[in-house]
Image (tube, rainbow, N blue to C red):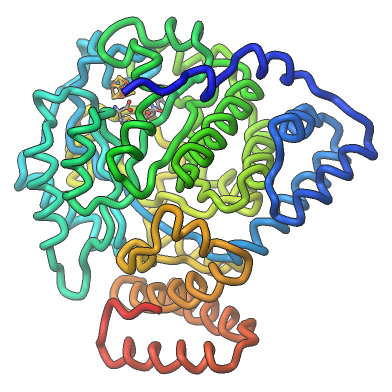
Amino acid sequence: MKANLEKIINEEKINNLIETKTSPEKINEILNKSLALKGLSMEEASVLLNVEDDETLDKLFKAAKTVKEKIYGKRIVLFSPLYISNYCTNNCLYCGFRYANKDIKRRKLSIEEVIEEAKSIINMGHKRILLVAGEDMEKVNLDYIEEIIRKIYELKRGKGEIRRVNINIAPLSVEEFKRLKTFDIGTFQSFQETYHRETYKKMHPSGLKANYEYRLETMDRALSAGLDDVGVGVLYGLTDYRFEVLAMLSHAEYLDKTYGTGPHTISIPRLEPAQGSEIAEHPPHAVFDSDFKKIVAVLRLAVPYTGLILTTRERAGFRPEVLELGISQMSAGSKTNPGGYHEEKSTEQFKIGDHRSLDEVIKELSETGYLPSFCTSCYRLGRVGKDFMDLAKPGLIQKFCQPNAILTFKEFLDDYANEETKQAGINCIEQHMAEISDESLKQNIEKKLERINAGERDIYI
Ligand code: SAM
Ligand code: SF4
């Protein structure tokens, strides 16, 4: 298939917009508009990306927090990645798995090893896994993927299980995507890394990934093959972040117009050190913390109904500052090397910045007013793609997501939390229950909590 690439990304248009500055009055107007949850045009997003002074940045952050809470409430969905292979035929200059890295210990997990890793993730209390692999379709082919997904879904560990498998592997052809759809996956993620052609060319000197167009059309192939949820992303640090954000918004708008649904999630990885990578050690366009926060806030306002994912690339101490600006999902307790949950010494893809256990992260979330969620119900009830977007209107997400967060969090507390975390979690649930004004909804949740107390699991609304 061939999409009209100019419709996805028009570099000239983006370059013309990138420096857009305007009066303080106009900025206030844009921020007020964003509070109506209607999203932002590329031009408006560009204005906000160019905000530099502390006072206006503060207003931007406040608007982002308001939008986040209006739509998502305080809930944060948790997941963990499962790296299945670090073989790769590509040569992305920033990545520890690149083909030219001869110091790496290559590993592809056997089916049994994948299951052992999945068991460790279940034992932490997770219900969602993101399967991740280097790009080598001979090593990680669809037969292998099919078998591991089936076996992961079949796994039961006491009261634990994986209820949603998301995936971040090599981009596939339309035919392959059609087959992938039959494996009952959640979201298919693939990041463009950089939308800037020249930078893309420099960063991806060889392998299939060197083809910018093929990568850019990944989501066209996925959606036209019938996949419901796709996740996009940029690897921040490779080129001017303003260009990347505007280009990604252009991509999201194109997908929405063409397929009736935009990306389900946006990931915001920032370059981290990776074995032997000069680029990863010294990013050509390093994104500082203050800019990173601005990126998250602008994305939250520009595409209010799209999930924003924060990973353990970011430092433990910094993550709370970003969470409040618009994050809806985060990873916790992660390892980025195949076999990593068993202390295996294979090479990590990159260095992570948050080494805390899931239990520690949950305790912090509970104590700081968030509501940890292990919910997977939308996907299992068919609330995906356009249906999800239609549902994701103010109030409705809270009608489903908030109760399901409470129910799945209670399961976690009963089955996995240590004593201190359990106490913090119980207080957190009480606090969030007290804020529900709809009495019949509250009673419904209370009844379901009693069933969980009595040992039932996987109860959702
Ligand atoms: N190999 C597939 C690919 O490249 O799309 C899928 C998985 S790849 C292991 C997942 C993502 O990790 C990449 O898309 C890239 O954005 C990110 N990544 C690679 N090197 C990184 C680094 N040094 N720091 C942070 N993230 C990195
Ligand atoms: Fe391979 Fe993906 Fe790493 Fe590139 S980012 S070298 S494709 S694993």
